[in-house]
Image (cartoon, rainbow, N blue to C red; front, side, top):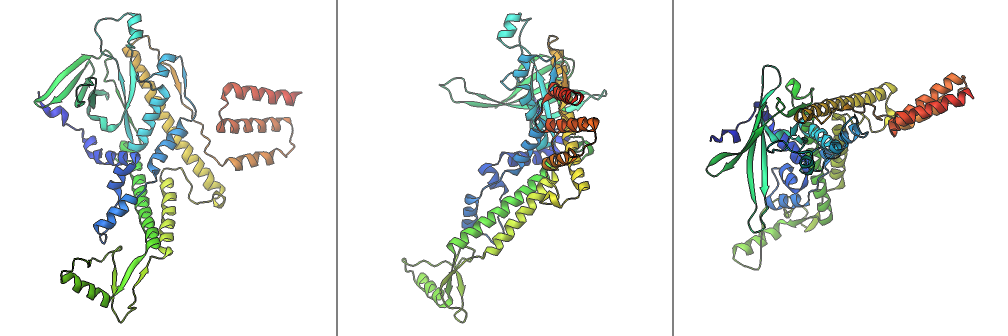
Length: 460
C-alpha cells in the first residue's frame, strides 16, 4: 500500500506547521525550548554561551496568556439542559469531563488559532445489549485535537468535510517481558467509514476499519474567524516573539549580574608578553590564552594603566535591560487585549477605560460563542451515533467581569447617597446585584431572590 497517506499535507498545514510547532514549544517551555530560543550573539565564544544557556530561565508568558483567556471564558460553567450526567462527567471516555475537553479546545485555539473536535465511537460487532454497552462503555465520546494532529482534509461542494486524515502515535507496552514499541498510524475518515493504517518497515498496512453511521465526517474544525479566516497568521506567534525577546534580554541581564559579582581580569601588556614567551618556550606549568572575550583577560599597554586588576560591567546596563523588559511585558499583554496602555489605570481617561473593557469583553464573548457552537455540533454528531444521546441546550456565559471593580463600587456608593425615591433606590440595588453576579456568579434564582427582597423592602 502507498506510503503517501503518511506524508500528505493540506496546504494550510504545510504553511503553518513550523509556526504551530514553534508556538507549542513556547507554551511547553523547559530546557528544550530555552536551547531553541536563546540567541547566541556574534562576539560570544563557546564557553560563554554554554554558561549563559545553562544559567538561563524562562518566564512562560505564552502559557500564562493562553490559560488566562481560557480561565476567563470558562470561569462560569456553561449551562447544558437535558445533557446526560454520565457523558458530562466523562465526555472523552478517558476521564475528562465535558468542561475539561472544552478547556483543552479553548487553550489550543489560543496557542494555534485552529483546533479540532473529534467525535468517535468504539468499534464493536453486532448490536450490544444495554448491559454490555454500559459495562464496556460503548458510547460516543469527544476528544480535542491540535492542528498538528489533523494532517489533511477536503471539503465537498456542500461546504462540509468530505474526508479527513489524522495522525496518531500508539505506545504499545502491554507485555512486561518485551520492550515497548512506538507505532505511527493514520486514521482516515469519510462520511460512511473510517480506516486505520500503520506504518511498518515494509510499508503501510490497514489494521482496522469500521462503519461511520453518522453520514458526516465526525471532525469539527474550529478556527478563529479573524485569523486564518482572512488568510492571516495568528496573534499568538507575535506574543511568542516578544516573550523570546524578554528571555534573551533577561539572560543578558543575568550574565551582567554574574560579571558584576566576579569581574573581568585586566593585565598589563608586559605581563602578557612575558606569559606568552613562557608558553612558547614549552613550560608546561604555565598556560596562556590569547582569546579575547567577555570572560577572558583584557590586555592593556604599559603606557596605559599598567596595573593588573578586575573590572566589571556597571549596573546601568542591567537596569536598562530590565526597563526594556518591563516595556515588552506591557506590549505583550497589549497584543492580547489583557492590559491597558499605561501602567496605571488612574492616568487613563474614562473613554479609554470604557474602550478597554469593551474590547476585552467582546473578545471573550466572541470566543464563548465559538466554543458554544463547536460543543453543540459535537453533541449533534454524538446523537447521530447513538439516538439515545440527547442534544442538550448549550449556553455559554457571555458576561465577564473585566472592569475596574474598585471604581465601579465607589461609583455605586456615591450614587447611593442621593435620595431620589423608592424607584431610584430599587434600580440602584438591581445594578449592584448585577455587578455582584459579574464578580461571583449567583445564578438567576439567586438574583431573583435578591430582586424580590429589594422590592419587598421598598414596598414595606
